[in-house]
Amino acid sequence: MSNLGDAKTDVSQCCICTEMLTRTFPLQYRGYSNTRSRICVETPRFVAWPSLSPLAAGHMLVFPKVHVPNLLRLRQDEFTELTGLLKTLARHIESRFGRLLLFERGITQSEGTACGIDHAHFHLLPLSAGLIDKVLSQVKRDFEVQSNNSLSGLRFHHSGELPYLIIGESLESLQFIVSSEVPSQYVRQIVSRAGSLERWDWKALTNQEGFQRSLEAFGLT
Image 1 (cartoon, rainbow, N blue to C red):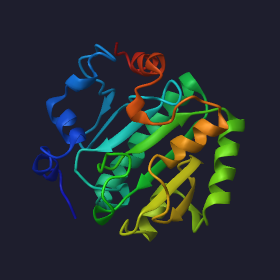
Image 2 (image 1 turned 180 degrees about the vertical axis):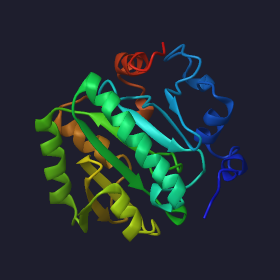
Image 3 (image 1 turned 90 degrees about the vertical axis):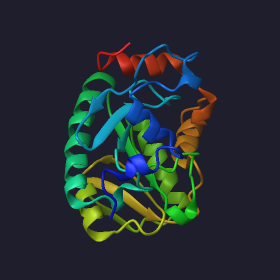
């Protein structure tokens, strides 16, 4: 199992590790936002910052400081800290932006990168209740749900040795799909279709206003 020092080992290959260690907004995105750093929340083992191309204002990502391909690979003490952070962060986001869709596309080292990022990350995405229902229904049509469990329960029963998708409205009730067929940025794609959004690819750098509103919700500009 990896430890916190591994993030330094991978810093030259991982843009996420680089941003966490330098604590500065990447130079290539400075034309998109003049923020010095987009780190909104930090704990000893995790950081949270807004998606570069949020599907809605308040769309946040949580990363472990240790470099792992999926969150189920974390040690138990790391996972306990993650769960506490996600609960606190979810309350903060919900109080400002409304209900959340929670998800992680967990990859494996052998699978390579998913959305161009091979550093594990968990999404907290504010959406309307109707849109959340559409997205979860689409997931059930596209894939077989292996189990429905809490985040801590999934960590207890699954090792993260196979690619997976975790998705749901609550950390206490998450659909778990084990499949190597989940496309890159799959959830972003189906959210965009269900909500009639123009673009889903995070690399397109869309929704600059939503990005700024996410920063402002945590006292950053």
